[in-house]
Amino acid sequence: MWLIAGLGNPGPKYVYNWHNCGFMALEVLAQRNNISLNRSKFSGSYGKGRIFGEEVVLLRPGTYMNCSGLSIRQALHFYKIEPERLIVVYDDIDLKRGSIRVRSSGGAGTHNGMKSVIGEIGSKDFVRVRIGIGPAPEHFELADFVLSDIPKEDHEQMFTAFTEAALAVEKRVGDFA
Image 1: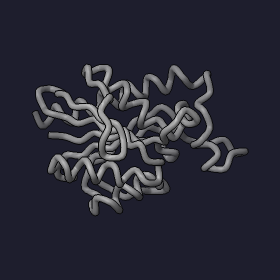
Image 2 (image 1 turned 135 degrees about the horizontal axis):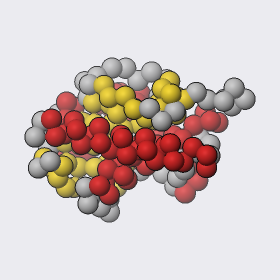
Image 3 (image 1 turned 180 degrees about the horizontal axis):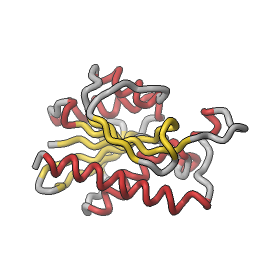
């Protein structure tokens, strides 16, 4: 069994923010695999299904980004999933906008949501699918930029990135099927 979590902030104010790329990619993954995120538990919403025959739990934490680790830790413990079977999908300001990078372990960098995940689960050994949102425009502070809406001119590029992130998750799960 795999736990796949997308990071973001809850509520309508944040729906289209750069910082919610993890949520948006998780939605694409859910749609591609006919998984409904309509159950409530683990301080968030989740759904269960299969990808390439492997059982998966898709999780959208309902906590704010900086506390995402709490929700993920609860789901890992409930399902007795080891961190090596966790995939976290999130935005990364240090990657070129629209690019995708997959890593099997590593640090949190400047990402407070990832700092929360690592702190709560006590491990850096889990898969990350990073979605590039950088660079931030010079006139923006980092926090203001990640909490701003994705402009219309970037929608197509970012939807492509969300689809590529979903494909990267499917490939990782499929490699172990």
